[in-house]
Structure formats: C-alpha cells, structure tokens
Length: 255
Image 1 (tube, rainbow, N blue to C red):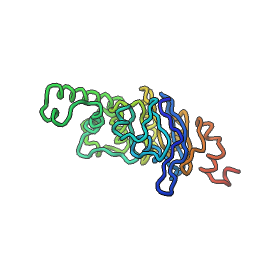
Image 2 (tube, one colour):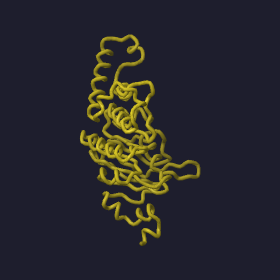
Image 3 (cartoon, helix red, strand yellow):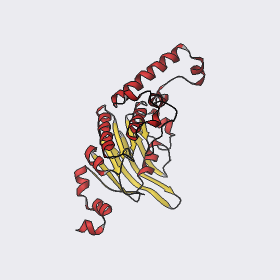
C-alpha cells in the first residue's frame, strides 16, 4: 500500500475531530473522501500532510511512519497537496508559480542563487523546462507568461495542479478541487485529474461534488462526525443505507 491510515485520532479539546479512522490507498488509484460538513475531512488531510500532528494513531507512507513529521519532509518523500482555497502568488506568472513548487527538488540555496553560479543557471533552465512541460500536460502552456491570479478560476486550479506536480509527487492530495467551479470547469478538472492519474500518480481527494466523485474514483471513504462509516466502490457507496441516511435524512432513506 502507498498510504495506510491506522487507528487515527485527532482531538481539539473536548471535540473528537477524527476518531479511530482506518483505510489504505493503493498505488495508482483515485480514492475519494466524502462526508457532510464537519465530518473531519479537512482535518484528516491536515494530519496526512503534516499540517497537524495526530493525537494518536499511525500514518504510513510507502511503508514508513510519517505522523508528526513537518510538511516539507513529507513533501520530499513524495506527497503534494492542493487546498480548497487556491493559493497562487500575485504578481507572478503562471510559470513562475509552478516553478515555486520545484524548490523541494532543487539544490540551489539563497547564496548560490544570488551569485548566479554556472550550475545554478543550468538548474534554473532545467526547472523552467520541466515546469513548461507540466503546463503543457495540463493544456495551459499558452498561459505560461500570464499573471496567475488574473486567470479564470478553472485555469488557476490547473496552475495549482501543475505547481503540485512540480514536486514530483507519488501521492497527490486534492482538497475540494471543484470548489467554486461551474459545471464546465468541474468537468475540465475531472479530465485533468484523470490525466494526472494516467501519469502514474496516485490521487486522494476530498470533494463535495458527488458527480465528480462517482465519475473518477475507484474507491470512496465516507466520514461522519470524525468516524469512518463506509468504504467501497462508488456503486457500493451509492447503495449503502447508512450513507443514504446521512445524506438524505432518515425519512428519505426509509422511503
């Protein structure tokens, strides 16, 4: 397994945000985490990516425990993340934003960069070429020199994807990639996620758009009040009575 979550807990005072969650993610798959607001989905992502330490439990990535490690060390091991609210740097082009994501794979530091040594110039050219390839992969190479925050929302999301891919992740965490997008932009995001996965990159996403989830996921985990209540294929989740009850309410589930 690429990622294994074992007996994971996270408490905030008296609130149990994540409670005894267990699941795994196989290499090469697209897996989704769904649940109502307040289910603990974003907290779970924060635990996996190192933004929060767990209260207890274990997170294994590529067979090694990573719980409690800082995010930059987890990123270097091959995990990248995007956020629900797009975080692009204003005043920088789309290409420059993607190049920022390459820093964890580069050797040049502040001093060597300031001195513009020959090997740092070569590395900078290589970074630029690699990031242009990623923009091309996501069909936005023609926007490389456009100021990133001036782009349409869906295009900004594609830039954010490219920046995450610049880190060369084996596992990509996508936190509500369709948030704020219209139906056409959501369809484009679904296509891009499929394209990323086709490169051999495993995807774990949190998402509220059930059409997107059902269309692209091989497996789904359902959380409610911090607990895992179901896990299975999209077809199995659609038939699960407990999931139906949570999403539709008791009366509709019984009907």
